[in-house]
Amino acid sequence: MNEKAVKIEDSRDVVRARHEGREMARKLGFGPADQARLATAISELTRNVIQYAGKGVCVITDASEMGIAKIRVRVEDHGPGIADIDQAIEPGFSTGNGLGAGLPGTRRLVHEFRIDSKPGHTVVSIAIVRRRA
Amino acid sequence: MKIAILKLRDILLTSIHVDLTDEDALEFQADVLEMVKKTEAKGIVIDITAMNVVDSFMARILNETASMVKTLGAEAVICGMRPEVALTLVEMGRELTGVETAVNLEQGVDKLRELIKRRQ
Amino acid sequence: MIEEGGLIMEKEQTQGAAQVMDAREQESLSLIELSTPALKVWDEIVLVPIVGVVDTKRAQQIMENLLKSIAEYEARVAILDVTGVPVIDTRVAHHITKTVTAARMMGAEVVITGVSPEAAQTLTKLHVDLSSISTRGTLRAGLKEAFALIGSRVEPRDEGVDS
Image (cartoon, rainbow over all chains, first blue to last red; front, side, top):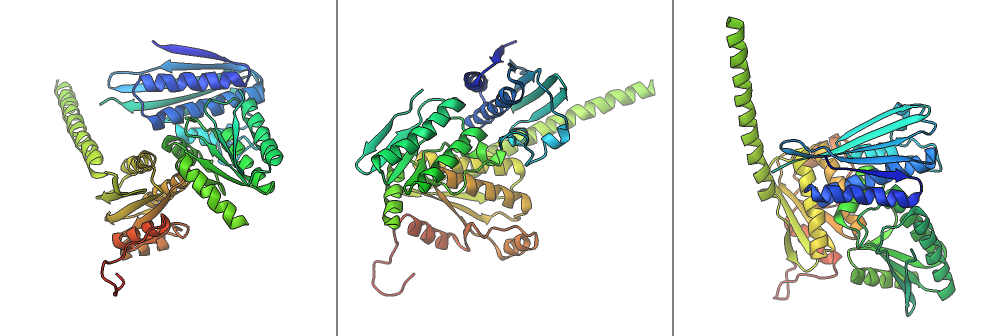
């Protein structure tokens, strides 16, 4: 199974992570729109890590199965966590200097979206899927 | 990563050709404003043809830069946004608003000239 | 025994149904690709005529196609002709609005043509606001608007009646 792990510690890692995501999407035959969606989603999530938790990790996995191409991305940190997840994915919600539209926006870009968060551990998992011709 | 800003008579041209970190983007914004002021340019065309990711942060920087340039008394045109980038921004609900745009550099310069003429 | 047989049959039926679905999906996939061409009708003008029912998936495809054609042909105006679309509901209208916003960010205007009186009625009743979007009743009027937007004009060769 093809997997890339990118440590998220500063803003250069955000660039690195979204680049890896885009590359994997391209190699698996996703079109430019899906490549951009995935790269953008990774960018939003990893920036959140830096902003709210300081550091974390982004794992990009080729989770393709028979007949479908699929990329799963897991962004994990040990920061304070998201107190109210329902509220955090409401459009318009934001906690830090006007950037917080990240989560609801990101959710609309991907096919799967899941948050598990408690104080000290947050995992956001996303996936994009494409039916193989 | 430093983005070059070129002066061409009374206007400025710049092209973002690399994937910028947040710090790079902020530095770019400061450089643009500094150049507009220093050269007393009447406007600037910012070419983003090479950008294949514009996330909410970068969208905000572009939006802000354009309106800051206006505040300085000059005009700004953003050109070359890729279809997939435009699509992603709309899907995220992060549209650029109130920013002048053009399909390519040539049309961008034409549009800037038009805006400058209108202002005078 | 009977139960077992029943189960097997059910399974077979399900498989059969799945195959039919696949075939239909294939068919609709190729139809999608066939039915949304982007035509360059003039320098800097592209035309996307939509024919047939538009569901969410197809709307997305059309939207991507239209934006791609703007970049490819470096168009300043895209005409989206909906004469052949039987029903324009809120969902389709929403996709149209999104497309227009995306196109504007790319530096192009979108002109919607061929909105039927029924569609206009429905949209207004559904409180869909298309007022910020340039719409024309006919493709002909839309073309004229497109030429105006790129700073050209089409005139009859003979002096006289304005067409």
